[in-house]
Image 1 (cartoon, helix red, strand yellow):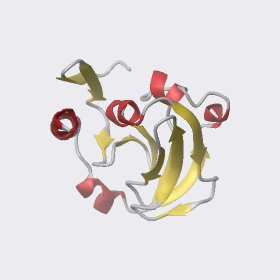
Image 2: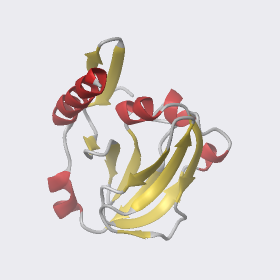
Image 3: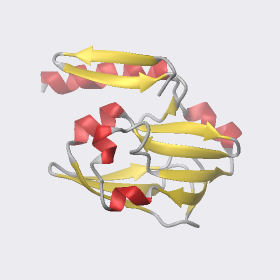
Length: 149
């Protein structure tokens, strides 16, 4: 990615957050593409959950409300339900993940994307999203809290 990237380092871990994206507090990144949005797991979310073994994304045509599960990942540590940060309809999913779910870990902001959603309520949805700076601060707080456990 060519845009500026914010880096948060906590202990020996570094988490990246490209500035051109929006983020949900659940760790989903959102890249606006006209009246659609491409969604994926943030660097922090993929590192926090471990190596992805399987990714199951809801099929094309699935209508979503904000908060509905649009994908699920299975890692060696845990199964994770991923909530949609947007209202809309899935119009595309990353079929590469069926054979190479590890793309989510290797390249979360490019090849490891999850789904594309046709937006239904962007104006109200974006009010609940974070910019890269705010998300980086949230990541720092969450990572520091994890280290204290």
